[in-house]
Each structure stands twice: as structure tokens, then as C-alpha cells.
Image (cartoon, rainbow, N blue to C red; front, side, top):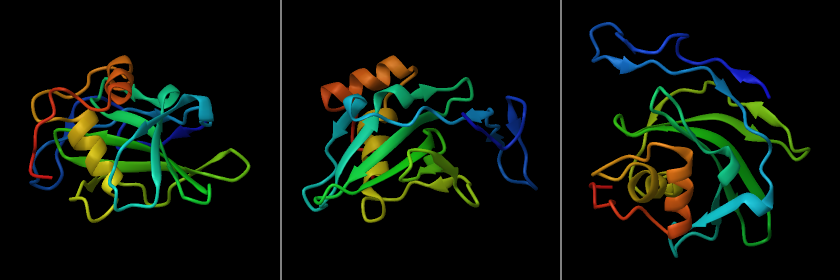
Length: 164
């Protein structure tokens, strides 16, 4: 497993030239490469030709509050797009740490940075994971076990519409 450089070494909050304090991210380690038997499916939209999954073994909720997971997008012809990502619920942001190679290894994403989770038009899987599974309006998941349970049940019972 490769360590990924994060925003800073220490937990807490950082200031950036007058911006509001932002969480400081913990050191990140890439997970084991996902195996099909650990895929947890989730519904994104009837309008997409991809099936989406989260690798149950990759899910973690760090002390920094970041939900980390491997997401798999499978096309109708069986092609896979796999990435290891993080989600900050309070900030409504995601970050891609790494992408999968065909040889079942990871390569770090270039210019990996936190980006806003937009509405369903661009990368709807992130919006669905944010809204319906990891970060519903009433309460975010707080452990890997809870995230797995929510994915297996088809959605967070605490989820409500959050404008996304």
C-alpha cells in the first residue's frame, strides 16, 4: 500500500489567506485492490448506462471525518473504471486519490484536490453517495460498518432531500 500525501500532517483546521477554516486531512493509505465479491451495488439513475458499486473492504471513516471508499463503474460491455476517493460531508466535497490500472495496481491521481460535489449532471454517483448513503442531511455515517450497512440496505433511512 502506498501512502498518499495529504493536505497536512496534523489533525485540526487550517486557515488559507482569509478563507474559512478548513479541515486538515490525515495521511491516506491506498486500500487493497477491490475484489468482485466485495462489491456493494448502489442505484444511480436509469439514465446512465453504468452499474455502480462501492468496495466494502475499502470503506473507512477517518478521525479527520473523511469517508474514504473505492467506487467501481461498470459499463454495459463489462469495462471497469475504478477510483479510490474521499468525501467531506460538511464541506460537500470529494477528492480522487488514485485510479486503478488494468494490472490491478493503483496510480495516484494528478493534481488531487478537494472539489465541490455538484448536482446529478456531472458524476451522478458522487451526488447519490453523498445524498443517500454517506452524508444525508440529518446525520453522516460515522464508521465503515455503518456505511456498509447503509449500502446493503439501499440507502440511509436518515436521508432527506438536500438540494442535490
